[in-house]
Image (cartoon, rainbow, N blue to C red; front, side, top):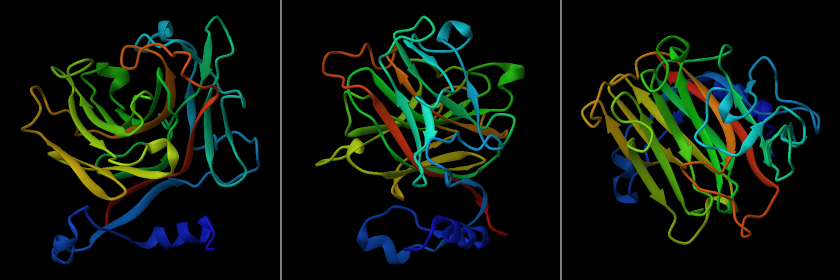
Length: 275
């Protein structure tokens, strides 16, 4: 088996990716050329924290200035976020009271460490499941400290309601289309669940459109003409990985929600178009 370190060296040169399509159309497509600009393969000792040169954290509860009626406290404790020693990041939601909340979890971000305008952003993830569980891989503009949300713009590469483990959602939030009224694209498995295996979730983002992919299958496109307000996706965005517990989007966990719940991330990679 080729190690991820060797694989990453190859990616540093040029990566050839194809748009998702029907088999009959595959031969008609030209290779899409990308060069790797940032990645984390999560190599490290078991129980170690994520690389601090690549990730920082949001900490606390929703009342600390962000949140969607969620019930967890976000921490950076190993109980909630750590490397597994096998090249993966594990974010874990627990139903053990912590710091005034009934649940704890983790929310990692690259804010202040890495952001990019346009390109391909992807992660290979195995999602958690269960009512009230809300995993996400998403992005916010660096301008959030200046113009606030939703004017800054938000790109949700992956969201999943734990009570609907066969359906993923790609979403844009911006001025005039945010909160409960975003612009969405949906993709469902006919005979499977996203918590049963790893899938690659990605967007390819350009000046006036964003394509949404799962396992390189293009399942949705949102263009500047599709949003009912201003197109604000023209500044560098940083990435976020988290599991929320409860909230406006998923509701409260039930007795059918097993804990602990973990989101396992094999890698995160970012590309720009090769010259």
